[in-house]
Length: 219
Image (cartoon, rainbow, N blue to C red; front, top):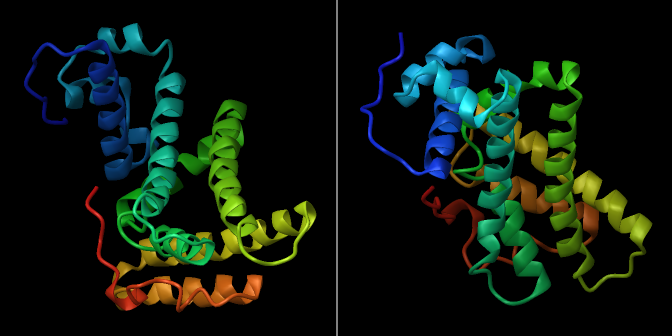
């Protein structure tokens, strides 16, 4: 049985967020089967009936939790742009490096992502959520690529974004599943070299701080 959180009065939005957080914690610990309505309520410190006030069905809560996970990973990658140096090369380099570094690369996040995959096959709404968030990340990547000083039409930019995103996704998966198999910053260095090779630009030298010295951003 999950440990019950102490009850205290919360705003509607905060209580909804608490239920989503409890669901994510349980999925991370034991997969979707562990995230029952009863266990989610116990973890959040509320009654099971209260969950129905915020989510009409268990599937609605699952969808909200998956949205939170996917949006969070894109947000963490995009945070690198907030203080990025001026110029298209450093901005793209910072984004790529962040996408394959902590906190985006994270064993818990990849476990959560894997836990939701089964629902993507059976639930059309979950597939829509996945598609929306995949395209949000890829479109941001494509805009950064489009800013580079190189000739490319829209079709080429789309293909480049898909190829670069595939490299990023693969390194994210490897780094999250096997976090001790890589030296600090190694995945970022590989990503910069590989994405740069696809685009025909030198991303590896575009950052003011070498990839092996990239600091971890606090969550």
